[in-house]
Length: 247
Image (spheres, helix red, strand yellow):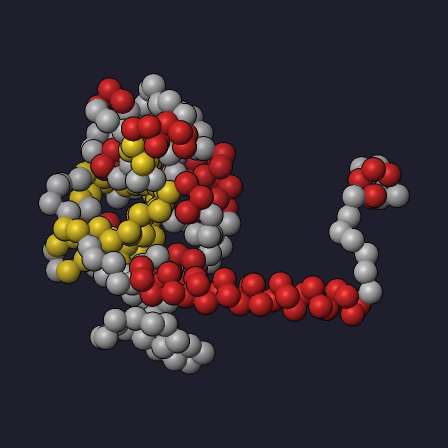
């Protein structure tokens, strides 16, 4: 017996069948998996055709290099992905779930090669963020939005004292049914994507709740950007930058 298991643990397992029966069921599942992949491709194509909204409000962030505006966070790149990491000003540590999510990212260098910058934003003071970043060994740039409306406007800090709250595009009774009654300021997870044209910044996409589960690697992150993976197998609007898929 494997250490740490019991007879009951060992008795709980998938059904045992012949190789032929297994293959029959595996091929049936493969059809479903391929249908899911095709559906995912269709959804990605629709996402690349979403319109965008110009950001007119001035937001101020503080990073390791000092105070920055939203346009500065691009560092000259065309697209910006923001990981809304739950870390309230009064907390000493970041959210465990967000921490686990952040640990899954791995190598994000391919994003920069496709003119994308990835950053993390939280409301905690920058000193706390940088200390936690050093503790975890992370290198993705982290910025504090404390003192600005950024977290509130993008639905990742919900505070009923500031007015009606909304999360994952739900409000009122629909929000209460989804997450319960929100009686005080709370932090919530999400990702937002922005696009730059000159000095103008546009909001293109945000995902919340279980919508962030697939955003744990480069391909998932690329799929939520306006230009996508920038590969020629994708159904993208005319003029979108694309290269051979395996070139």
